Amino acid sequence: MSVYILQHTYGDEDCESENCKFLGVFDSMESAEKAIDFLKGLPGFRKWPDGFTIGRYVLNDIHWREGFGWDE
Image 1 (cartoon, one colour):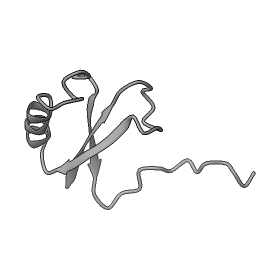
Image 2 (cartoon, one colour):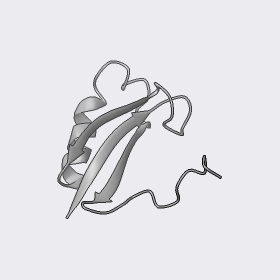
Image 3 (cartoon, helix red, strand yellow):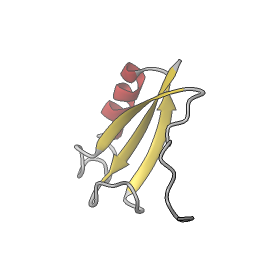
């Protein structure tokens, strides 16, 4: 089973600043796209309509397998 994570980013594109907003978790791509249709009309989002991203994530799976190297 998968879920779809909706985020919005403007400015930098790495989603590592306050310019990245976590907007929700959806059960289908269609539901996430409907949310974008709604959000595009709101203040802030109207100015950055191309900042939406939807990521598909499989439940019960590890999505970061590389570590992060601080203990080397």
